Length: 436
Image 1 (cartoon, rainbow, N blue to C red):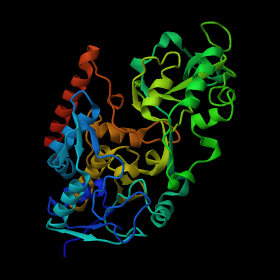
Image 2 (image 1 turned 90 degrees about the horizontal axis):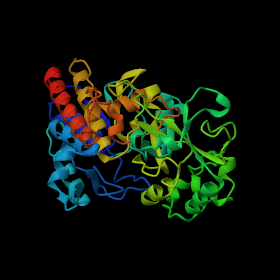
Image 3 (image 1 turned 180 degrees about the horizontal axis):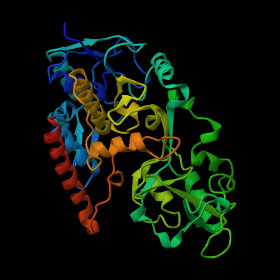
Image 4 (image 1 turned 45 degrees about the vertical axis):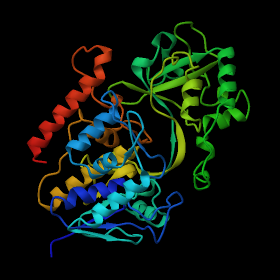
């Protein structure tokens, strides 16, 4: 009997990986613990359940998510195909009837030759044979322990405490200065100084802003050392000035004096196109983040490519654990896929499932593993989760800041379309070159 590839987890990534393997003629066993066991957020017994929103975000060519969707379409993604078939009106976004969507994905895989679906919770990774782990952000307690055993406890995280990220081109640098505290480490941080009046207005707006309530199963993942910014502000109007916004050790080079408070921004990627608001993990609603954080000097017109959040999320320290092929460095027959690799979003998770499935199949057939160029959306995501310079590693959704900058001078209004053109051209050349 032909050897089998095991896929653990029937979410978007696991279903996409199963499809990519089986459609190429390789036998697959897909394990899904529902309906025998449910996570705290799942309700449906169907595969590919959409837990949060029914939207897969924008299809616009001016949006990085639109570029990623086009790449998935050209790579024959099951998830994207079914999403388009089950879509509901949502402007330029791709939104679906979530029940019909999950039902159709389930029926396709149940009827696909070479696919066996086993409905039981897996608590141990097979010791031999090619396996893809796609258990998602709510991986069960038992299986989390298994992953910790393989990767080491320090390489598996159970929550996101994420600060917002803005594009460098949207920052007003004339209102900022570069420096590290006490001059240690060079000019590593971009500092946004606040006067006393600016600081107190910011704190008051922060305390009054609308928040997203934590779910019961998320509450135990917060700890004192990483509280949301607004909860610190609730403890007193001066708390932030002695915490993440403390100005100690920083002199505004333009004035020669120490500001009353400082918001520090840290370069997020090697290209210098993205900056992270240090210590700004938050539960504010996205619209409130935009309103309040644009009160910070220099960020009045900031473009946010990632919003701050604090929520339950199981993910690997991928730069230390995984190869670009999504294989575990210490065990090449074990692949990881989906949100557990350190991507955020439905389409991003799907793309990692597609790549893991493709490489698992190629390895089974004795072929070399492949990774799309970093100029593509999929390749840019892989480059982030494998090569992120930020410690500790933080997940990311697709955005134009992850793509390598264009080599030539391009007008600002043309940049996104030029990046898209380059991505799709390079993807097609990669497909032809590798025989995908």
